[in-house]
Length: 318
Image (cartoon, rainbow, N blue to C red; front, side, top):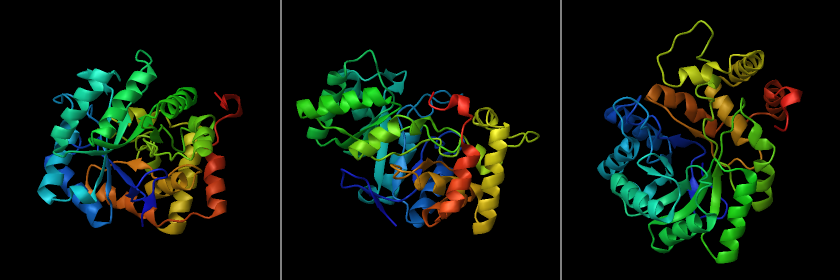
């Protein structure tokens, strides 16, 4: 199964494999095993960033891109793999100035051991750099053949609309996709960004699709898990979070799949969502994600999950 990303020639698997664990909780060999298993299951879309994962002890950034580049070279499958990476969040190359984008792109290409990036994201908005400068720099990369398409992550709806306007007025390459924080526990995306993407025909590729692992059901109040995501996941252990987990468990049992696959299938069924991102640090975790590609939830199941995850009324729209 392939999903065509609107406005591009990219055709991708319904699950985008997140590379933020490569070089951290998954070492070089484990990362190769995960990517091999993903490819064997028909996967062809891998997402990373130059900054992954500089914050972790022993890391400095660039580790994920390096491992992916080594894998692409070892397997000889660059032409068959859609590679997305990002610029702007790494302290070594911060922000979206023209100079930084040019240098960071070349370094990402070197680590990925390729001469082009399929989808190049602005990792986050940079209010200190004019959008014209950023978009002109991205346009130069596209014209040079170093980047096929550009995209935006962590942009507000007004800033995204402004960026799209500037690209259109100047004939620059335009953002063709958006990567926001969106999942059953984080639904702010639906208020402003989703309507804008629907209006412009842009696909959403959400990150943290499993709420830092919370939606897999493995985080319980009395469970200790040694993971850099564990503390982030525990914030969701609320009455609302427990309702969502209970509904996920019921739907998962009905379909004889894991809760992670159901959470991803819910995302995939949402308007504007093209392909959610999720990472796996080993092949067992990956096996729990892959059924999402074929999983079709009924309208009733989707409505039950949505209702369980509806934020309290006093927070709606904020």
